[in-house]
Length: 395
Image (cartoon, rainbow, N blue to C red; front, side, top):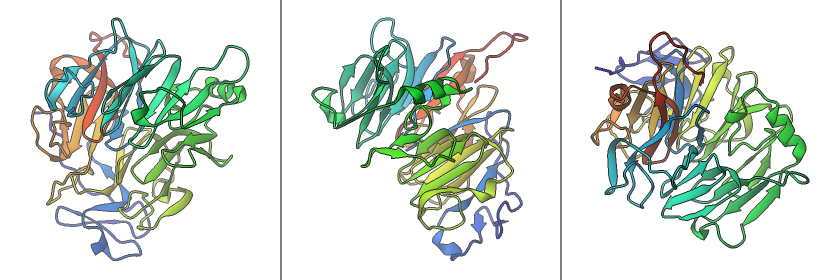
């Protein structure tokens, strides 16, 4: 029960396109197909998705913002460094558990998970680190965790310069001086506040959507003026950008097909995904070497590396790579990919090459509203389901 039907292959979306094979996807771009051991370098649709699906991918660094309605955060997966993850007992949590809050009455609004530590941000403006990196700081609006860098957005004064972007070494415990600072102009703040979906413009995309922050120098990277970004996600070696028109752009390293352009070549600048032309997208997520997006009609498209089944395709080897998480419009959570540390939330350490519903949230009558994936763990924000016949809140 709760299992998603295995994906079937669809007609080509790109010249050359996808062809069905015996339990595998075969791509015919301008390079030998054998270089794609598993996976593919063009987007494919995962059948059975729809109804305003949401996605997140492991090794995707972007945090997720919980909605205003009161709910709770849950965690599961690896916590061997002492990360705040459910009860935090032992090194692994195999099923979702309520997240311990940073302090009495703390209301966590955002979670950003890296491999060895996690950053949580409260609505009161406190950021707290747990795991291999520790420390707390106040006056914070957002935080973004990676192994190379911890980025914090500090609130600016009521009058004068705008908020300050700070880059810290994760081991600094937020003490001393940051590695780098950048003050954002108030004009960018006003532009962002006037947008329809300010919650989508979270780090690493900066307020105003004119630049983003990178874990490697240069930390501040401006975007071309014609790119009206709505969301930006960073994977292990690539970036995805969703613009205001629902178009998807990708750039960075492409040796695992994670850029979606039908080749394994790198792209130094944002390039439009032709395979998705005419299909407006609502969400994007970047894994280490794979990519995911969701159309406005709720269909999920995936491409890139499939070594652990994270593309929902059969694979001979379930290696230590990544996972994919999807939440439907009904608020149900589906996970698949590598599961050695319980990061899929199915009360075991089994890896999966097809989506499977996380029954915990169904049994508890909880509706999943936001997901944040670390490399080996998962954080989920959920609210109690409304009684039948009452309106459901928007995501």
